[in-house]
Amino acid sequence: MIKIDEFYTYLNAQQNAQSFLYQCYSEMDNAEAKSYQNCSTFMYLLDHSRRFYENGKKTDELVQPVLYFYGMVHLLKAYILTKRPDYPESTSLLAHGVTARKRKKKFYTFTDDEVKVQQHGMFPYFSEHLYSIKRIPFEKIRMETLFGLLPEMSDFFALQKQEKLTAVGSANSAQLQFPIELLDNYHLTETAFIARIQNYLPTIKKIQSGKLTLDIQLEHPVNCSNGPFFKHMDNGKLYFPAHRDSFFPISEVMIHYLLLFNLSMLCRYESEWWGDLFVSKADMDYPLIHHFLQITAQKIPERIGEELLAMKVERDFH
Image (cartoon, one colour):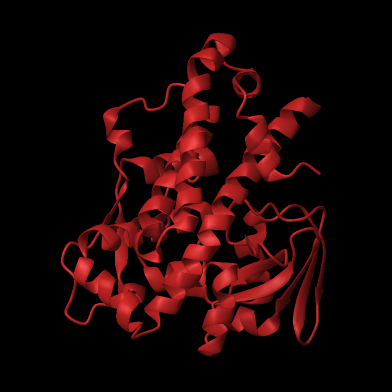
């Protein structure tokens, strides 16, 4: 099993980076020319991303969101280049693709804040071209909703007696087990619930309904690249939104992007609130933000590295 760190190191050599891009472009016109043309940019983007993340881990938490956000942006741009050799096709794509509230309310809390998705820019572009999500299932979304979709944040919400996600299986298993009470949360019958999730699942082989659980046997494990199933990076468990209003079939990478964007905006432009957060640690915002920053610094480079490696393995196989 190739380690993700080793794969990033492998791509740090010009010959390897060019060869990888050539594999990615193999079914396009001028594959060789484009792989040479993009090779240096691809390597610099990966290198700059690594430096942003490394420096973020060493620096004060006060400035981490900015470093992690730009580390993620560089990593996404490198990933985009593997699928879109002419990126950026226009200057509008260089915008973030999302906006935050300009004026903060008097009793502002981060969890109640929201971001608004734009029609053009980085966010809708990578959502479409990396995760095949052409239509974002919301125009605005609250930070608490985004936090609630991250498996590694589940324990924090559990301490507040809030269940945002439910463990329904393992990422390596073809067996899913939904608590019957989850169907009540969705206000759906068993048949309607299966119809709702069927498009996000591999072929269903068998369905068994019990008093406490609904068991689904699949042909192979669920692909975790997009929601509504999210994989915990430490225990490998598969999580599913516990409530109907949190059912968003989007990539977890999109969730991290939106949270980091808003945190980096606060960090840059809301000095008084941001500074006070770290001094007083007055409300639930601080532990949530603190924990999220630790998660994102590890999970995003790992997750995108896995997706890049999967592209190489797939093309080597063919």
